[in-house]
Length: 259
Image (tube, rainbow, N blue to C red; front, side):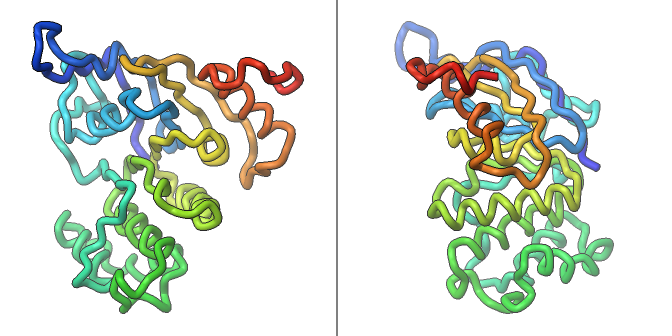
C-alpha cells in the first residue's frame, strides 16, 4: 500500500533577471493525497504542475511550504518516491530484464526483490521481450518497460510526469489500461501530471485542477466511477464538460452535462 502525501502551503518562485523579483510558479498549494490513491494534476502548460511533482519527488525545493510523505517531511529524493518521465529512460545497452535488475541493484533491493522480475515482465506483457534491447521494442513497449522498472523499486509513491504524452492516441489508451491494471494490482499511491482532460478522468479517483500561472489549486474533483471506465458514457462526458467549464474552455456548452 502506498504512502499518503500532504502538500501544505507550497509556493515556488524562480529567480528573475529584473527588478520584479522572479517568476511565481506555484502560489500556496494545499492538497492531501490518500494512501493508495490515484490522483491527477490537471492544467494548461506553464501552470506549475510539473514543478509541483518535482517538489514532491524531492528533486526541487519549495520557496515556502512543506511536503509530507508517509508523515515524514520531504527534503531529498528517496527510493520510495519514483518519478516516471514523458520519455522512457531505459538504458539502451541493457535488455528489458537487465534494466529492471539495474534499478533494483541501484536501490539495494535486488536480493529482496529479484524473484519479482518475472512477475513484472508478466504484468507488462513483456515476457517474450525480456532479453530484447530498447531499440528492438515499439514505443508503447518501451514505455511499459520504463513504467514497470519504476514500479518495481517504488513500493510507496509513483509520480508520473505525462509519461504517455508522446505516444499516439491508440497506444496511449492501451497504456492507460495497463497503468490502471498495474496500480490496482500494487496499490501504490500514484500522482500523474497531465494536460489531457480525458486521461485525467479515465485514470483518476480525484483530479486537482490548476489555474494558469501563478499555479493555484482551482478545485479538487472526486471522480466516483468504477473501473474499467467507459469513455463514451454520459457520466464520463459530464465530468469532461464540467472540468472544461472550470478551466474556462467550454463557456458555451450546454448545461445538460453539468454535475
